[in-house]
Length: 343
Image 1 (cartoon, rainbow, N blue to C red):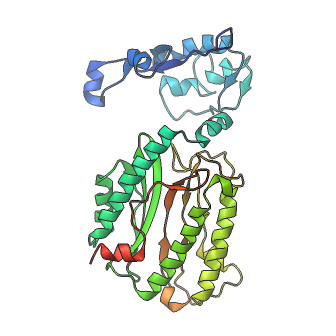
Image 2: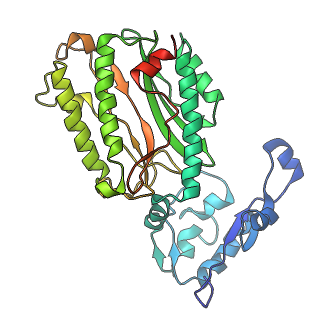
Image 3: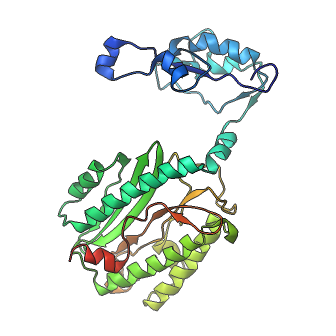
């Protein structure tokens, strides 16, 4: 921050251009692009960060950082941020000895909490691509999980956990994380490998789908619901549905069958803004997942027709004032639509 405290100087230290190295490791932005492209006020070689940072810290009234000691890397940058640095400055901890240090996480958490229109646009593009890939994947017949995984992976830049297929129940539960412009959406679909739901599969699936619809409808600012409250509603809805299907819901039944939370915040990361409480009422501009699921152990405690089934339906949702915006709507999830893909 300048001495007048009405402006800030953005310093960006990067690796300089090096044609020989870039031939093997790929293109670097370089110090000039730090200014021209990334709008830094001043740039410099990352190797000089220790000398430059000491001056910057000395001139600062407050320093915001969550840097922790680490010696896992040999880079100059990482050594600097280690309190056990072999350099004369003894790393960042030495630089900060005389500085007023404040935590950075809470500030970043607040900045990432409410998404701008541009951020939501990126997430919508991610969700659209992911949803279309899912629908196309459900249209085809797969005999190997790795083939389905490869199919989905080819259609977007993303992180893809392996699908979970239960051979005895012949259903595929497939999660997917799609990324666009560094923003992600999370999505899970479950469908029958044969293309047609059996009656027990359909009953369990529709119970989860009805719960998800209810929960998504509550993702609006005017409802003043928190993720924890919506999770409670999901538990109540699933419990009633399972009783109607003949499940004994005494003791710890629901905890066994629905062992995870209904949702989490998303954005620049799959589990974004970790400091944001799930107890706080949802606000317009927050983005969350809604992912009820039931996983029936193959034991005598549960109705025989449902044993071994695992079904989850997940969409990414942007909270708005009066209604939710589903970011992953291109992935079909109605029983009739799923079965129609293979007819």
